[in-house]
Length: 448
Image 1 (tube, rainbow, N blue to C red):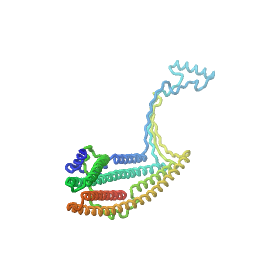
Image 2 (tube, rainbow, N blue to C red; image 1 turned 180 degrees about the vertical axis):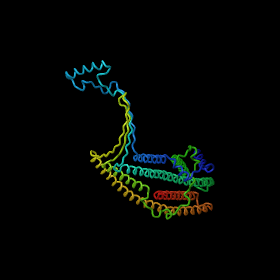
Image 3 (cartoon, one colour; image 1 turned 120 degrees about the vertical axis):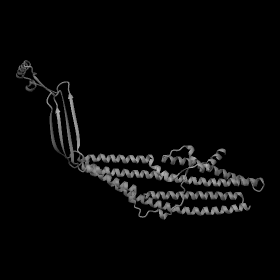
């Protein structure tokens, strides 16, 4: 009981030093979440890939350098290697060898034991079956799709944060209602205890009152624990630094407030094709079509021109020489024609699948819009019913208080009326939060 009283004291003391956090502040912190950061990195990757694809228009320049030294010459030729192994060749080789040694020469020829060379080449593609152009279009589409996916990821985080925020607000409102009801039951307990001691009330009524009060405080303790868990979940998602001891003093400042009517919520001329999910599938369809064009480009000839320059001394100590050339190249694929044809056919099916997926999504979005409209209308009607219930319960409680003061009603009857008011107010808060969430879901679908 002491722990319960301490907890209730902390709850009641919250307004004195409470830290407030508004919905707008929570939504502003969403941009720092891991999902948002991951989406930003995906956009940067797509932009880098787009810049990489643009370089395909530029000439391909390469530089090659070579230097070598072998243990033995790569080329070693004697007269016997030229004339073959015969008596005449052997006699001539013997005479030549003797003459060479007498005159300080070698009777054989060696080459390529060491040397160096370097070359520069340039290749400019003129036509590649449209693959370069379509590759750049595909990269640009990838950047646009990454940005759209990033906005969808941020929107999903914001929707989740707003949903959690209003659920916490709902529990805060219910906690407030339960504390007010607990205060009334505590006052009734004092009055009824005095009446029992004076013989003016039955002890059974006092026991029933205390049983209800214990149930109410147990529910309040459970609600307070659940409230802390929901706060931690929300704060972790938005990256808010906190300590466990700060949770009771952290209050979400927004309330259901003045609720907009359904007629002001529903968007005029709502185009389902403009929904980000539909646009993303449209981009997927375009990407599949571009991939198919690139596959068809593999079946077409490729044309390129180029130039090369070399400077080398492949066998030292020979003098270095230089040379240059220009060339044109036409490449026609033959072996891979069948493979590329089937790849193009496969990508054609991929385009068709993307088209059907987009049409299917539009139908689902139409059903979802109708459902969200129904949720908004139903929640609005539920609020009206709950408001009427609360009005009737409060009027009955006011009358019961007058009767209790006049001695015409028992404390048990007053307690039951108070509990009915508490239940009605909780239902009203739940219906208001449900309406808020329904409105947020519809506006999120509409891209607001």
